[in-house]
Length: 414
Figure 1 (cartoon, rainbow, N blue to C red):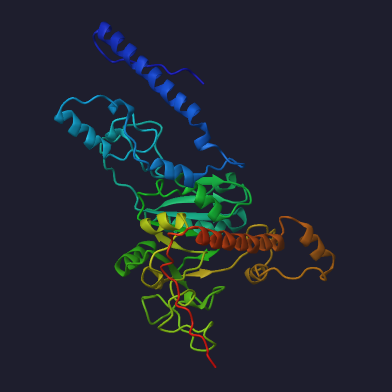
Figure 2 (figure 1 turned 180 degrees about the horizontal axis):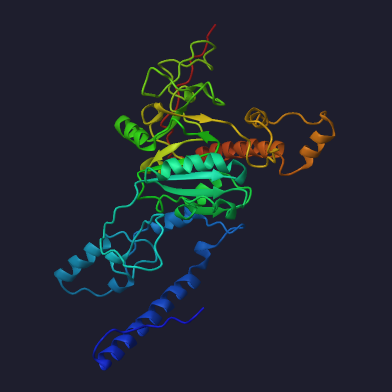
């Protein structure tokens, strides 16, 4: 790497030399400050195995209120004392105490910048208002192409999570250089989202679409969808599914032709545990969207990123007027024959089955760590681990109150 060269555009050589010297001196001081801070504070930002930042601890530290060491001076008059008290009220991100407040930017965005050309002097440039992030693999390239084209046409920022590590083969699409590509082999979209969609990075976007690739969008219009969820006040939503052409896992996600949006599902048969009616307040009767095509508002995404939700009976819903197809194609861990039909591919995405008595091919699938069976098994195990973490956190946090706690069922005294 070439050393940095400073250039002074001043007519007076002496002034130029003086200013350059001052600039170099200040650069060295700032460099020493940041290097020293990084060395002294190295334990606070240690990377865990797999090069993953402990983002929760980092964010908690970043919102501490600190007073610059420069303000630790003896104050002799009321005016100076008032100034110190005023500065004490300022909440500064850790590491920015020595910088003037106006130069600190606590958020960012995913807009790509030109390497050359003029720089806009507009302090409030118009950014695209929403983000689409899709987990993609090369086998579903054509499906993903249809999704990307529809969203780019409506002025979205688009980010692709390449879970199979293949990126170069996407460059034949004319839009390839206009989207952001992130690649990591055999990772889920939620792994990508936790690491690359921090709320401070996507804070400028009103809505975050976090979608799978196996969705049909022929009947979907992104801008019309945004208008609906804004008018309906939905913080977490999804487009409804066309039941005739989709793989449906939960009936609440099925499109109703008689409504614009629905927030609950009615099932009048079954016992108390399986019944859904107007009094139901818990998922999947109400406040439920599925994981393949969720849409989050800016505020909801910040909450979801920390595994918290809002009022699910009002702020969560399924949009019937704008609907999609869910093809239910197996992706991670599957290596399908290119000649297989969609129905054959979909049949492979069922829950883990008993492979012990299914012959040699099943035995080889059982022992293949990247087989569809073992990946599904891992997902169930991870869900069980999460539930244990949740129960432990609830037990240990004496101050937490469940906003959706259900009243205890009356005891039968007979």
